[in-house]
Length: 201
Image (cartoon, rainbow, N blue to C red; front, top):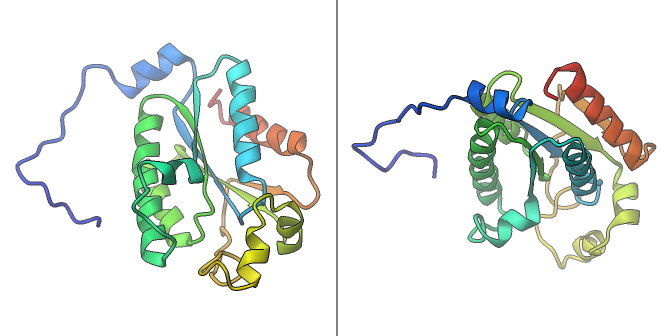
């Protein structure tokens, strides 16, 4: 699905630049890519980071995995091919948000390293921040609000990441959050400290 089908198209540069938008917003446009197993706490941390940034008058937005599948990606399932296309589309959307100067957070399992690396290449240096929410299967099962792990183990859900489908851990993420031992407040603080250190906020 990545092959260019449209012809006779030209990329248009605009009068207002990314630097102009960032100067107006007093922040840098980036994509905070939270990855980890289902029920590891990705969405919870992403939402709390976004809320804290909003309290500090920063322009933010959360691109949540389930929400995206209700609209933009509602025609995609969970096969390896569909997962790849799901991440490709959201990477493109995330790039647009970051280019608008928005501090954008995503909460996707995004199990394949190659897909996350492609998102990194698309955004470029300093714009893609990979955040690995590291949690054991036991922790995820205990937290599992939807009962998905039980269904997966009973064979009711096919291709479920961590049970019947693989999860490839990040090799060099910018941030690792140990969800087995850390509180949400601790995880959020680590992310905010990183953003301050890198002068994104």
